[in-house]
Length: 139
Image (cartoon, rainbow, N blue to C red):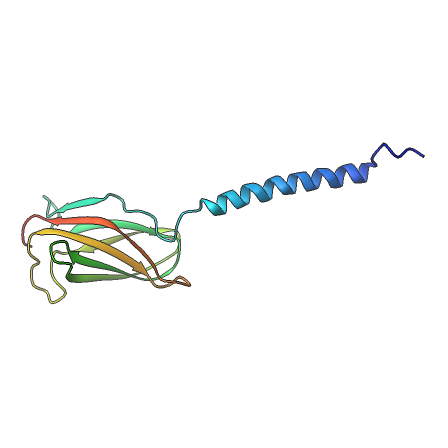
């Protein structure tokens, strides 16, 4: 009886377990570093109006689907000036547009505005901030 040699079935089982362990490790690393539910802005500062466009265009990519609201907040006093609402689809880049007007339709005052985006389609609300819009002249 030779107890020191492994059978071909035992070797194949061991190899399969080693490969499965490596795959599980790399999958766990991918999950750990996966993109958040909302990815960053296309750029951090948008100045408008510009020649050829009187609107502020900014983009966000969502990894969830659902209603998205972008609050435009005056940097000087923290007051919400307008809210842009769209429905986003998973893994798509979405363009958001602000016309430089308040929710009531009046022109917003020139100055800096912060944007906070919130998606309610996730199991818990997700938000993203960090974008500054600079309105250089009234629309």
